[in-house]
Amino acid sequence: MNCPFCKEPMIILELNKVEIDFCPNCSGIWLDEGELELLYSIDKSDSELQKLFQQTTSSKEKSYKCPICRKRMIKTQFSKTDLILDRCPQNHGIWFDKGELEKVLTIKSNSSSEKILSLLKDMFSYNKSQEAE
Ligand SMILES: [Zn+2]
Ligand SMILES: [Zn+2]
Image 1 (tube, protein in one colour):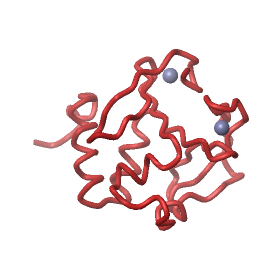
Image 2: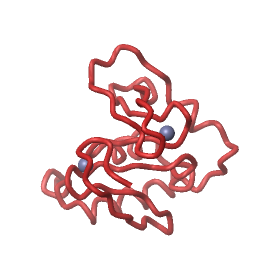
Image 3: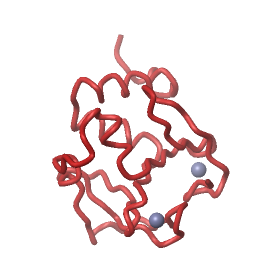
């Protein structure tokens, strides 16, 4: 699978037994449908998390194409924040630009997402230098 942003091949990373697609070039992350629920260790049929994602038309950001079906993705606002994500209109998954998955995991957290967040921070040391000791 190629990165929807820079078209480079993505690599598979394992986060707490969940396999995610990561672009080493732009540090973006693609999550297949249901993988966000896996990162939170919640059931896929639990719609609570999905309700936090609302389609928005206010974003001026360029939209990307889904790496699976190549359809143009929909701009999606996360939980009334200024965080705008790209989501496949056919629900193949969600694209997170660099650092956006960490923001989502921080805004909406549970014990499982906190574990994922610390794994991500270990992987991407760019976050560490900004943290207070
Ligand atoms: Zn990329
Ligand atoms: Zn798609």
